Amino acid sequence: MKSRFPNSIVLNKTRSDVEQLTEEHQPQKHRNPPNTPMHGEQPTPNNLESILGIYHKQQFTGRLDVEVSPGQQWSLYLTLGRFSWATGGIHPTRRWRRQMIRNDLLSSASKVRLRQNDRFECWDYQVLTLLAQRRIANGEQVIAVIRGTVTEVLFEILQATQLATLSQVAARSPDKGGESNPSNSNESEEIIKIVPALGVRPSNTDTGILPRNWTLEIQPALDMTQKVWEHWAKSGLALCSPNLAPVLTQQEKLQEKTSAQVYKHLVELVNGKRTLQDLAVLTKKDLLSLTRSLLPYLRAHYIGLVEIADLPQPNLNIANAARPAAEKPLSPEQDLVVCVDDSPQVCQMMEELLTSAGYKCITVQQAVEALPIILKSKPALIFLDLMMPIASGYEICTQIRRVSLLKETPVIILTGNDGIVDRVRAKIVGATDFLAKPIDSEKVLGVLRKHTKTANMVES
Image 1: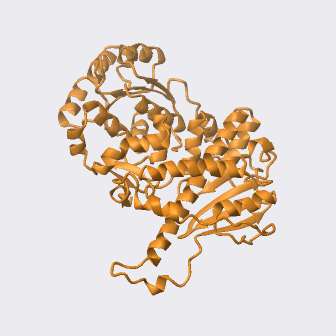
Image 2: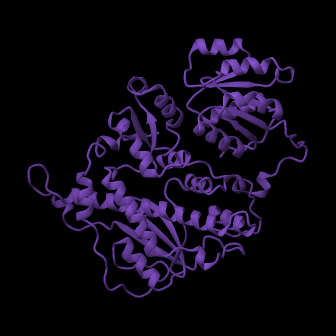
Image 3: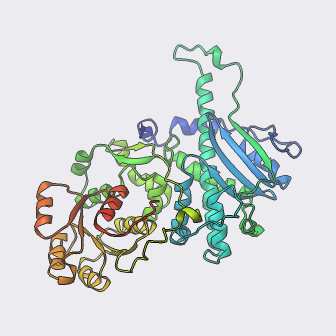
């Protein structure tokens, strides 16, 4: 992972120089748009709103390939001059997963298998249309997914455009000695390039033609994104991409400066593997509120921001998704996992991880409810938080081992304190294994493979 710390540049300012420059150097709108651009041609104005206005006026249907220097690319799909889909950027799979979670569709979407005769450009859009066709997703959910996806992509394009503009301004400005750089003053580089592909749709199958009222007007979508961007920039975050992931950089100092509860919460959430966008969905907060809550720790450099890779694309192919014929179906007990943790965020993360990996999952946040639920469900494995109010993980594990039916059930202790004393005590009370927080998906799945019989899990 390549480390970035944009907070050291921008986050210490309430109204940064970047924000002022952003307002001063907005590209001018083109008042007289030209005729309809054809396949491979680009309209004249160098401004996203003006260019999209042309396509809206001419009721363009097709794909717009957007490139912002240096080499950042997205695709916008229009149907009769309205947004029908958007994709591209560095995290298309993370973006899709966020929209599925936000609209309660992830579990259903993870089970979708694409037909062999389906013809489509965008697998994520194809999954959405299948969910709509099968009446798993209603009209409100479909529109919400499209709006959320388009807004995220437009925000990325807008931020990239603004930063590219500022970069040009800085390159043309005089150096510290008061002299301009002649090599940068000849002509302005093209900041945004849009190339149309007439008639190209995100899906060409029978499910891919959604009703017109399931598309978005261009101008309201742009206006909404512009407002989001303005609030983001005014908070001193103009240089901070929401696709960066917060990571603990000075954990000991953070522990000294925060309460035990706040520290535990941050350790569970901030692990360098979830972007700011991901965390906003996980905590059910809007992106700006979530990022603002982290600002004090970013400014103090207790938390940094790093670039991370996209998640792997989910396995949606029928042939590859099929299990071998010799494999026996799993019984309900074999693939059921119980997670006992007083943190709602940990429970949600574990549930999403386990269900996407092919397991059934029951989460329990109240320690006193743990044993009755475990006795009733007879899980294949139990994840157990060490530090909980009323009853600790040690006490619950001791109670579990007193039940004859549960003596061989794997119990995995979860804790933010990965010390030798805790490990020894966990073994004494009968714990099978030990996992340190923050939650690491690969380690969790590794423990599941080690201690359960479930096979052929698909990581997401």
